[in-house]
Image (cartoon, rainbow, N blue to C red; front, top):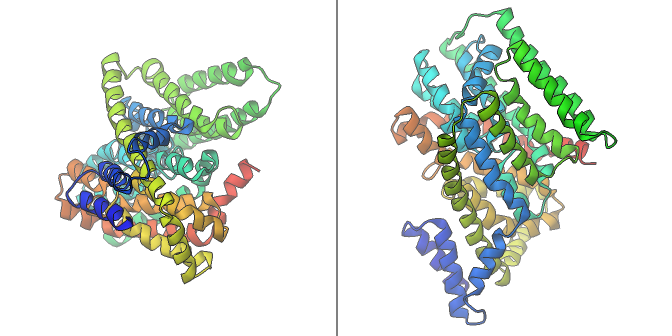
Length: 468
């Protein structure tokens, strides 16, 4: 029966059938032939798989990212990053990374970063004389920051499947995300030194000072908001009305470019950490903030654009949730056939050392990422890995970051890496040249992966601080 189950799954995938259909058909074939379970159980289990309150965050985070992309906020982020680090050698490479760090706090997906901000960055780097391969490589690497720095769509899916705190998962991504960015900027500096790339804008105390003032204003605002939102005795006017009025006046008087956009991750993380709203409700807050910026503050959105954005969001959400639904019945069959228990016993027979298991998982997930879409990989593999993680005493938050980063690297690897296809289309490079351009830029990502795997404090320090 197990041979039938896995054989039908692999056969369906081999014919080019979408992985969600392959999982559902393999599960139905097993249930049908076994004769012990009514075939309608497939429908019930699939519906049960998506009948989860935290999964409401999926469409809202997707919608928030699409709104930010369409409202011209990516241009403001790019201008802010240019003022901050564009004067360094290899300036636009550094701008690429800093811009992705900021945009990661809004989009939650690597593909949105690559297709939105990446389009602006690659064209700007080409116009400044950078090789297209260099522009594509750094854009691909920096786009992986999207699901690491919160909010993160893959972390929502992992949290649901692993029954882990999504708030802690979001907090856990901050430090690894900053480490990734620093590693990438170090590599940009090395390329700039070897290839003699110069600065892309003249150094100006006024321009750079303005960017730092804007950044400082965000930090001060974050501190004030965290204090106000954490005070249970204050009313809504003091928690929301007065701070919002001050922020709006400051933005207008000081002429900030990206101040309001930079506040997005502050609002999301501050609200979750202070208990003001749950991670699911944070997704709704992100949409509300994006609508406010697009329709009221910047006035760059229209009703016609909103309809198109909504339809795109519905299409993407349907795809993601169908994968989750199909994977839920697939994982249920894996559990009922005791395949997960057999795998756990086999892995533990090799070694009971957590670091050995994590090393094997990294190698396995890097391979899986080459062939399987991120959401599908998470929903299929989390039920397999979690029993082993529990037996070895590995923190599920730590394991979640390892899993997500591995699969983000998979987005850059052939044959099915989505970022590869997006950037090949944007840059007009052939698929082969795009792959060759991206390969060197996996080094800072792999270095970060090794660091967070074997130094768990890098991941767990902030969650333990915010959620004692």
